[in-house]
Length: 217
Image (cartoon, rainbow, N blue to C red; front, side, top):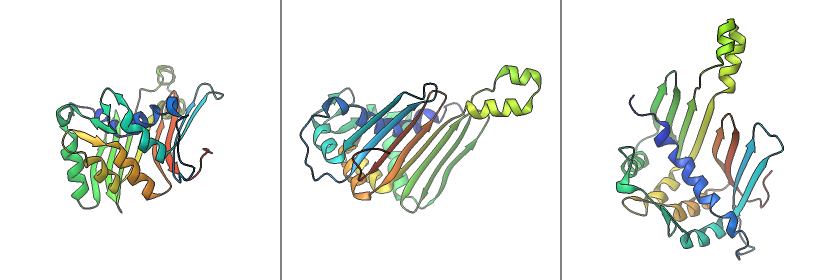
């Protein structure tokens, strides 16, 4: 394959993280005490166990604040995609096709560099990507298969995304060349508690989830 799937598949978790990462400076904004659902982002350093970043944002506040943010491609609660393309892939058309398609395994890639799985089941879109990095040269040189295997496992980067198809519908509601983040947040809130994104690499572990608790566990 000429194009790594990571460029495209990494866009969805990035969109979720961008929406959340822009909100902490505005955490003092007024919000209703009746907020039920919260978006949580937790980033933990794998090297420094004492370093953890937690972001907890009421969905209601995010819905109110995001339209006021104008930051590069994020404006008025929508993410603009230049010409509707990402690395020569029409993202909008692809998501629309997934929305109306039947359940099944759409993409399965197994290679020395990546394992990729894209599937749709019971109203959810699943994206799993495992990036395989070279194992330690020293382990290979000694011929120690166990050490090489452990090194390979430790150097894997994994991304797991679970998105309700109703959220995909909401994202597409902005029209051509845009993703409606605010509408997606409303759809997420209506869907209830769930984990959205899990990322594990050499440096950090990242979780993005939504539930009714104001403090992340």
